[in-house]
Amino acid sequence: MKRYSMIKVGNDYVVQADDNSILKVGSRRRAAQLISEATDLLNALSEIESPEIAPEAPSLHREEPELP
Image (cartoon, rainbow, N blue to C red; front, side, top):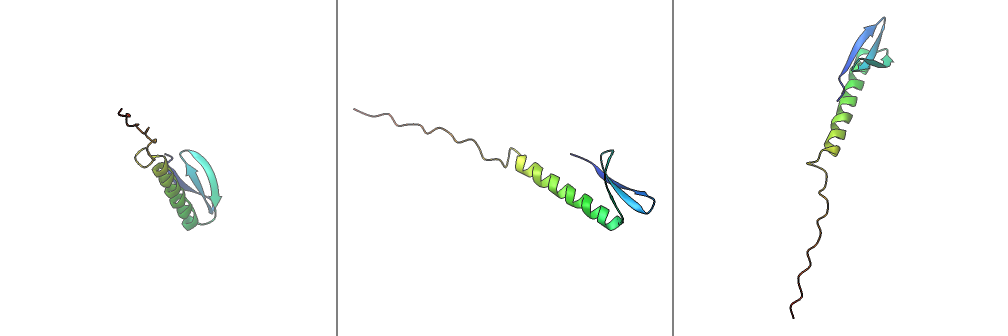
C-alpha cells in the first residue's frame, strides 16, 4: 500500500504517494481531502481482493451411486 503525504511548495501543496509527486493543489484542505479519498479507495480495493471476502470456488457435486 502507498503512503500518502503532502508538502508545501510556495503557495501550493503537493500530494505525494511514497516519494512521487502526483498532484499540486492550492489548498491544504483539498490536499488532505484527496489523501483521505485515495486511502479510502485503496482500503476498499484491498477488501475486494481479500481472500476472506472473495467467494469460494464452487465445489463439485458428488453423485449418489445407483443401487440395483
